Length: 369
Image 1 (cartoon, rainbow, N blue to C red):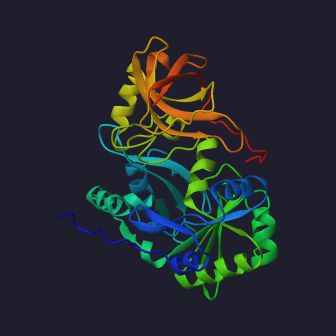
Image 2 (spheres, rainbow, N blue to C red):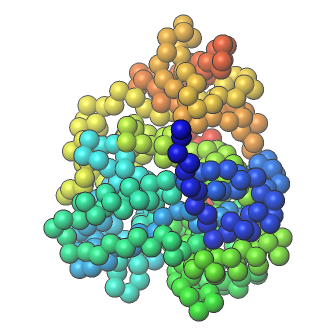
Image 3 (cartoon, rainbow, N blue to C red):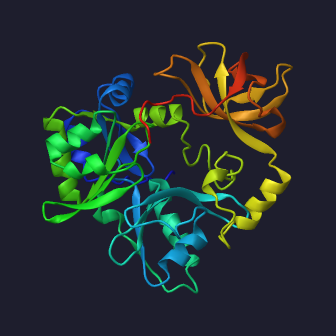
């Protein structure tokens, strides 16, 4: 008999039910997949503004005299020159180069600690791994995920909405991948110019009670609530990876084409030797973009073949693009077939559809980051 898995709820769960959202399990949470429909929500973010409940994401705080040295030890990117209010993207790796998780690191104000924002499905695993690798460092690690809610407001009109509806005038001077501290209902509010859609946008972190208040104000102002369905179509079009699909314990940043976020010039970090070896010797596989010459939808797990029918890879994410009207996918293929313009096929059920290798960033926003 299968054991029932108890789903967790975000602080906005009741709001989703009241709005009639279609709910589904995701990363251990009961999460909204869509409200008015994936296409409508996707287009709202591309052309105006939409908002997402991302309170399931994990927040882990690192502080102490050796916080910078410790974060640099466990993180592929370099935080040594990151100024307070700055954000940087990167990964935590196993010694063999496989990915523990990809995450954002925020350089805190004041004492100069760090906030690490990790994927919901990996939160507990990440925290245990971080504790296991803290030996020898004078640091304090606090998993505060349950004490925070988070809303992502995304789209070209997001700045105006945050100023007009929430009174957050500081967003006008905030650069991309930067944040500032504010106050909401007497509690800390982190306002971050960041997101996972390829559009301009912001992520707002505060207490669960404050998160509910902000959500209701935005709903009252007509901001469209969006589910995880269009969050995936948006990040995919923008060429952004999803942990578990384009990155995993079995897929390294080098294979995923994310070497720019791995600072091999740093003195050391966990997994550095493996990445150096991969850079020198090359990798057997590479993540590529594929465009199909048909409307067939390539789904994760579908085989990628040569025109002669030899299997050379697998689809990791695929859609008929809402913004572009083309059938596109990410695929992990043998490196020999990864060059732009290479002709391949994607097998959709029993039929092989011709495709060619293209750049992974399928959609280019007008927003200048």
